[in-house]
Every structure is written in C-alpha cells, then in structure tokens.
Picture 1 (cartoon, rainbow, N blue to C red):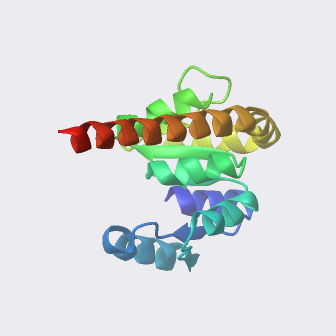
Picture 2: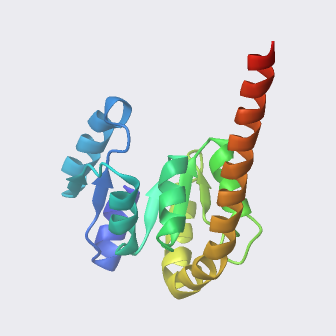
Amino acid sequence: SLCRFIKETTAMKPVVVSMYDAQDFDYAKKTADAIGAELCFPKSAESYIGLFTGASLVISSRLHGLVYATAASCPMMGYSDDGKLFSYLEYVGFGQNDAVPCCVSVHASEEFMKMTVMKILSEQAYCRAELKKKLPGFRALASYEFAEALRLLNEDEEILTEK
C-alpha cells in the first residue's frame, strides 16, 4: 500500500529490486505485479549504484540496499524490524533523531510510513547534499577498515604458520 501511495501521490515510477533471488524473488515479483512496477535484477554493486543514482528514493529492508543508496547519494528509507538498518541510518546521519529521519519499523502505522516518505521526498536535495558531502569520509574509512582487516588476516596467518 505504501508503494501504491507513492506512485499515486508523486507519479513516480516504482522499480522493485530483488537483491537475493533465493529469498526475495517471490515477494519482489508479487509486489511488482501488485503495483504495476518494473522488476529489476542488478548483478553487481556498480549496477545497483547506477540504478539508485537515478532514483528519487530507495526503500529497503536490506542493509545492502541502504549501503548502495548511500554510495549513489540517493535519499533512502529503511523499512525493517532489524536494528542494524536503523544503526546504519544513524551512522550516515539519517537516524530517528536527525533532521530527516529515514527509518520506519515494519510495525509502524501506515500513516506514519506515508508521512516519513513525504518528508524524505520533500527533503531530497538536502539528503543528496549530505550524502555527497559525507561520501569521501565513508570511502576513506572503508579503505582503512579493509586494509586493517587484511593486516589482521595476514598476522593471523603468520601466527598459524609459525605453529
């Protein structure tokens, strides 16, 4: 009903993405069919980011969806009961107490979901600008953390080899 509301209220064209076909395909297909949406199957991180770069809003119940939306500097909404999505949105500056809260529990009322979507859409320019501004810092941190993980793995391998 939320997707239908967005389609009717904004005249946006919804696109449903199946991130993990084994788990998501049936639900994604039913949703796409019910609202007359295109069903997409991006196969790489670059494909997701490219798709989301042109989107007005990404609504995701998957952490990877929010990460790809961040990389695309796309306004997003986490829709879940999984705390890691809400923690991630907090981390990128769109948590419950931020200027544009972008997280909705699956237990929230339909009215609250609609209100949240409309707030995010009305603040699209702000969301994009904030994400673009923070993206270099996120990339630098990810590079550092990846290098640190490799260092620790190599250190562990050396220790195991010595034994």
